[in-house]
Length: 49
Image (cartoon, rainbow, N blue to C red; front, side):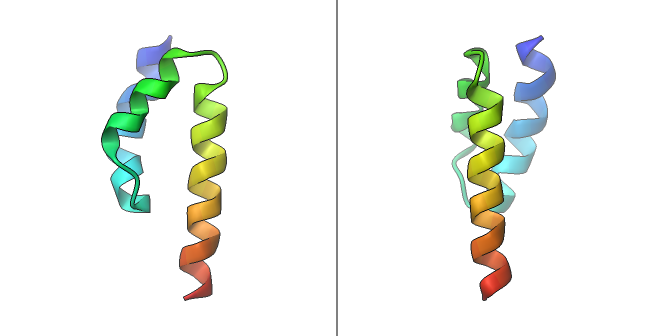
């Protein structure tokens, strides 16, 4: 199940300026939620520019 979230994260994280190896956080239960929150924060920063 974690591969279903880790593989897309490998491709999405660099677009938000986050190292792609952070996708390994998807192996823990709340990891994908934390990464989505982090990506949302980065998206808000990018929208302000």
